[in-house]
Length: 337
Ligand code: NAD
Ligand code: LMR
Image 1 (tube, rainbow, N blue to C red):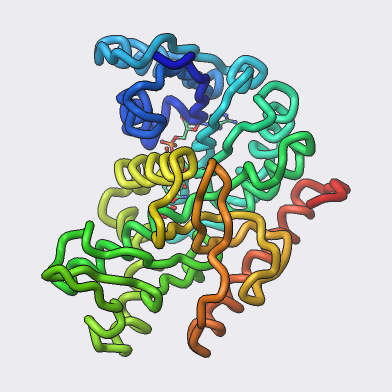
Image 2 (cartoon, rainbow, N blue to C red):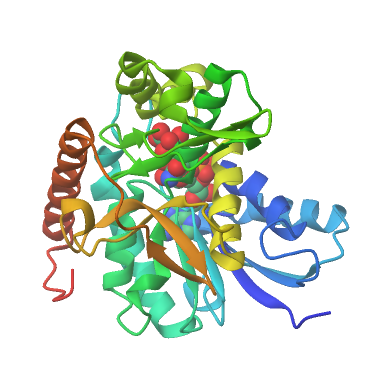
């Protein structure tokens, strides 16, 4: 058996964590041979709930879970962690946009960036789930200058999973038959779900999704809108934001970061933009990436339609605006934000 690794989940008493902790502790992210010490970080009013979660984790009798560390102290929560799932933040309610959470949530990510900087391993992989995820990840990284900025990411995998599921249903094929659907930009209603590079395998042949669907009206219309508005649709139905699917997506994201992607396969992650595809630089922008040796690389050389270019420009502009707003909320003179 390998040495245990320490993994922190913030918002550990919340609804996403309730599904996520179990999946991590079962070995679905870091592997079935990787023992884990789980750090559960939440805030003092949630200590009672956290105790219940600790009891349930014990009662699951999971062989890979060697220790659970519940805490409300970021110094303990982030100590020596190799992976961090930053979930803890306020969720939006019906009628809100995710960026309406910015002033409430961005300060959490300043504190957690500072704690990561001081206490985490320098090669820690950080996944920000709490909304607005892209801008929170940017803030978090900016307050953790001793950790490479490539180690910070925001979750758009839920959007990718939603988009892949829509395409598979439209074509009447299993999910596993559809690959390389991309989410560009912000995890918000301006994101651009793009089936333009997608591939579908049916009866042993690989075809482009665009050819297989053969309906641009759908691919540029209701497909895009359904994915953009899926989070709001779940809130309208459940009166709470998505949790099971968010936890699954967080596992998928970290799993692929940790273990790599298959040749020719790419996945979407919010990562620091280098200006690829005319996106604004130095915001956390969702790109298609390939992953090897725990390092992601933006897929280069894809041909984008004029429609796609317009969509990328809209979502990039929103990210730039969110960044400016975050700066004003934090009243920040952090030079690298
Ligand atoms: P929730 O309210 O059920 O749980 C959030 C938990 O975070 C609570 O237990 C709360 O006490 C805790 N928390 C608050 N401040 C904290 C802090 N400073 N440190 C540690 N813990 C803290 O919410 P949820 O449904 O689990 O959602 C969490 C976040 O994830 C929300 O912001 C939601 O919008 C976001 N989300 C993102 C995606 C995505 O695709 N990126 C998907 C779903 C939800
Ligand atoms: C989602 O996409 O389901 C989450 O970001 C929650 C939300 O506010 O939509």
